[in-house]
Image: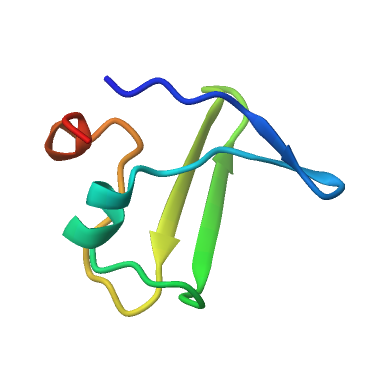
Length: 65
């Protein structure tokens, strides 16, 4: 499991994604992300355009950044 701190960026809050995860999923600056929010489960899922795989925020491949 990866633990990240919520940070303030401008007037928004953000959670960073480890660079190794972004490389594994070929996510680049400017890519479009769709966000699915599931309030009852307190979960947020991101889907990146042009990439057939879902980026999981707890993917084991990304845990050794």
